Image 1 (tube, one colour):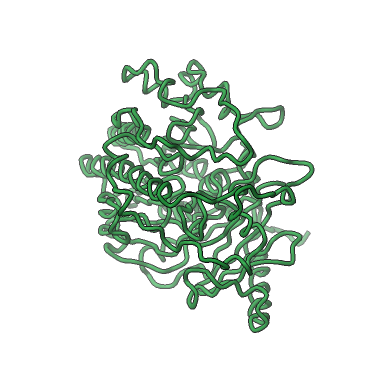
Image 2: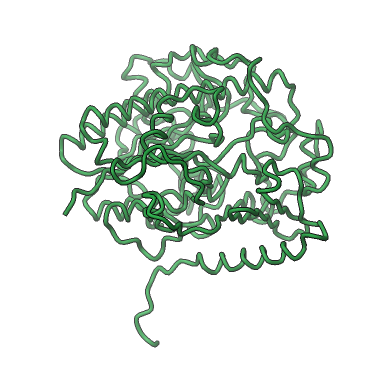
Length: 513
């Protein structure tokens, strides 16, 4: 029997699909470009939710957020949900997570206990003793912040102290954080250059610890499933030099900028993003008034937006350098040919497209579509670009297939290995993206096929329907167009069929009764 491959999953956080050097000459990503040359880039990859925790939980369960239970941020992924790590460990793999998890909320209460919350995050004595197992991972080295956020701590802070930075907290926002107004966007920073040395940046930490585990597993001769989970380029927009000054804001291009009137036929929350002080109270549940991502004013001065784009690119390029170090480590250990490497992001990002910033309940391609590259020397074609539909939901099933292990019935994702290998035929003719941010509002789902995209809102008569072939920039919502009503009915029927098809089968029927 051939030796089972190592599996290296590398993820960024909130990365727009068009931030690879091979597709966007304004950004430098030599390591990711190298992966594109040596593997296949998938141009139509989608997330199961445009929010961190739900998609990250889907990446380890192969289930939709509505099934695994972590349906939005601030909701705990139940610890009894089966994961791919459990399956691979039974198959002889060591399962490792380095970097961002975000499976648990920033609060803890009986029945929903969390270790990813304050004050535990900064309790370094706790993290000295905590290595796993956790959610199917044998070993974990974790952190929770983005850029200079106050949620710093865990294993990253331990590493900073080992590197001699005893006053690491001085480089991050204070805890507890100062109060802010309802309309204030925490992720914007006037000062985008960070005085933390790039040698102590969290991307550097992730690469260093990833390489250490690659070396250890190579020495032990044990196959690994290793998730190298980066935090960038998720805002806040802040990065050390020289990366903060790497790109000239004046050279930045705002892609698909807002056009007057383009929200006239969109659901009403779109147009309110163009107001200075919008009232979104109608979108909040009476029983749950936790914040909604993106439900705020999206107005921003053009020069500030260009500076944000330049910083976002710099954050991506620093991360790319560290990904290159990881790829070099595989080469150095002679593991490149026996390691399946997959790169993607948990969801996309708005940085001026349609006048929007960051993320929210706006299911344009910019936020639900993600970059994706897969490399497995001798198995996955090199230098190929595929337009086959991919969902991050499919990764667990595909990884198990690549390892020669059975795909359990509770996984809702599809085995894409043959498609990745270019064997012809793709198991997907559609993808589904869920987004439920509070119990009833905002609650929407999007169905996408090769040409069309349709979005349904819970309890609402409005929706979205785009012809991505005729209208790739998604400017013309056909939902209420009289000429598109037959098409809408057909797509809604296919949408309902996809819900039935995705129902998991945890236990097989083995008798008549």
